[in-house]
Each structure stands twice: as structure tokens, then as C-alpha cells.
Length: 260
Ligand code: HXC
Image (cartoon, rainbow, N blue to C red; front, side, top):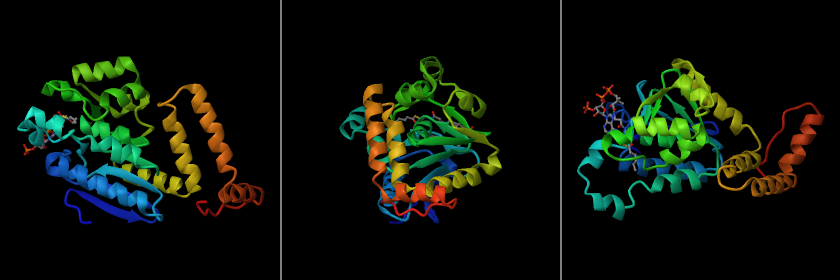
């Protein structure tokens, strides 16, 4: 598949996906969505790929939101009949069981912030700015912002962000738990790829189950989550990689993983 609005590169076991509309601050239109869905489906299907990084081209933006120009002339009924942008959560979150990281450089606004929050975690550059400014356009977040931001930073800050449309800088985002770490802008990609390589070097089934378990903390009760955690732990003890991992520890050498 060839892409026009994103760049996709494989770096050993890591897939790097770059949103590539810098002239529009990487605004997310329907074509970007289709291409991203295609790239993620390939990443998920390719056994050689174990972790992905999504970033934005240029130093100004990760993505400045859904494409306002595409949305401005669209009749209201079409948003509903097309179930506008419903593909994101289904195809980028539910269908992707392998880990992926958002490397946020510059603006991550509206849909841009929402896509970053769909990632398993966010690494931000010092210049990153997050926001849900949809209210200023007469709308509200439509791709998970009101829900994922609230789960990430709590009600008070999420209300502040959604009701005023203000931006949060990288330091505030780190303080609030929205991002896992902040790095200098010129080190962002290097740091994100290094982190992805670390994850890709882990036993693959354990990586997928760790991801599933942390996600489950947002989806279920503590009791059910704890039972699921125990069961997944028990399932993982039956893998060849568990035998290898524990043997490698005792023998003081790195493990060699089979993904089974
Ligand atoms: C389309 C966009 C865009 C967007 C920027 N551009 N954001 N095009 N959709 N979301 C375009 C501008 O029109 C301009 O193109 C070029 O990118 C550079 O942007 P400027 O505004 O000139 O840059 P600057 O002055 O530095 O301001 C940067 C900015 C501002 C603060 C990020 O661009 C901005 O406020 N953008 C909109 C942010 C936003 O409201 N996002 C939420 C969208 S709604 P030209 O051709 O003029 O040079 C949303 C809903 C999701 O995401 C839910 C859907 C279901």
C-alpha cells in the first residue's frame, strides 16, 4: 500500500509512522485516517513488528486536530450517517494489540490530542502543547477526548481544558500524568524509538498481555481486573518465553524470545 499523507518506516522490529501534512499542521482528514488504519493493520499483521511509534512531521505539530476545512462544509446529517471518525477507536485502539507510543512534538490539539491519548503512552517534547479546543468551534471532542483526558488527568483539569479550550504545556502534561516523560525536542524521536526498541526486545506475548491488563484497569472493576491479571499471569507461566526468561536470569544472560 502506498501512502500520501503518512510516512511508514520499519526500523528493525519497530514501525515508525509519521503524520505528514506539515503545511496543515498534520491535521487529520479522512485520508489520513484511512492511511493510518491501513498502516496499523499491517503493523498488527506483521510478525516481525513488535512496537510502533506515531509522530508528526515538522517541528511544529503532532497534529492540530481534525481537519476543520474538511468538516466546515459537511452537512450535519452526514456526520451522523457516516458515523464520522468512528474508525479511530475501533481500528487504532481495539484492533491493535501490540504496543504503540505517541511521540508528541508541538501541537496536539483536538483530534491530535485524542490520537495521542489512544496510544499506550505519550512521550512529549518540551515544546509539546495539548488541548481540546473544540468548544471554540461550537462543538465538543468527538474522538475520545472528554473520556480519555478525564481518565488521564482527572475531572477538574479535564473540565478546565474542555470548557476553556486552553492549551497545556509539556511540563503541566507531565505533572498531570497525561504524558509519561518529557524530553528535549531534538531528542524526541531518538528517545521514542529507543523506548520502542526496549519494548520490542521484551517477550512479545508478555508485552501484549501487559498492555491488555493496564487497559483493563479503565474498563472494569478492581475485582474483575485483579482476577484477569492473575489469570494472564498464570497463562504466561505456560509460555516457552517464561521458561527461557527465568532460565536466562539464573544463567545471568539475556533471554532469547520465541513469542510463544
Ligand atoms: C485544518 C489546519 C488545522 C486544522 C491548522 N491548520 N490547524 N487546517 N484543520 N485543525 C492549517 C491552517 O489553516 C494553516 O493553513 C496552517 O495549518 C498553519 O496554521 P496557522 O493557524 O497559520 O498556524 P499558527 O498561527 O501557528 O497557529 C497554530 C494553531 C492554529 C494554534 C495550532 O492553527 C489552530 O488553532 N488550529 C486549530 C486547532 C483546533 O481547533 N483543533 C481542533 C479541531 S476540531 P493555511 O492554508 O492557512 O496556511 C477536532 C474535532 C475532533 O479536532 C473530533 C472529530 C470527530
